Image (cartoon, rainbow, N blue to C red):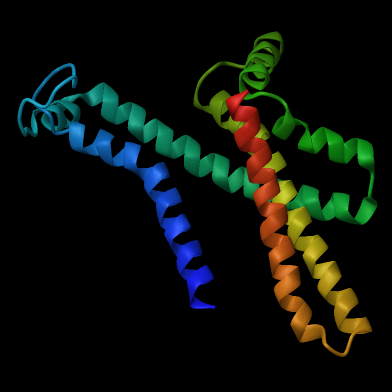
Length: 193
């Protein structure tokens, strides 16, 4: 019994190493004294001093944080409300419209939103970027809330119709993880295509 668990942990460790090793190399090479990073010349903090003295880069980082915070709050609020409404109404066309940005490639969605903003004469800036990111993120919030609502309904059904309901919690939790992973996989596959 311990061997399959050990094998799973080893496989998980290899997977994490595969995912995070390139990031570790980037972090290490950010301290390289060479301009090109083709070879290691020596350790330096010069590039970080340059970064912290560049006002435009700091302003851009601040704008990115502002857009990320606003988009997170808006998409969570609007996506949760949309998911609850669509879960009660069960209208497939509206659901497809809300989940559409998940299936559309990001570049196509970005160009379409840019054209819409230009046609509607919306000034391009932080507000339009925040709105575009919110439109993109709402579909993921809705899909996650749908998965949670489906598992909740399954648990309620099992709880009402089974004496061994506690044993089914593990299955329902697995279904929630699977449903969440499925939408993450769809996002990853559309980002790669």
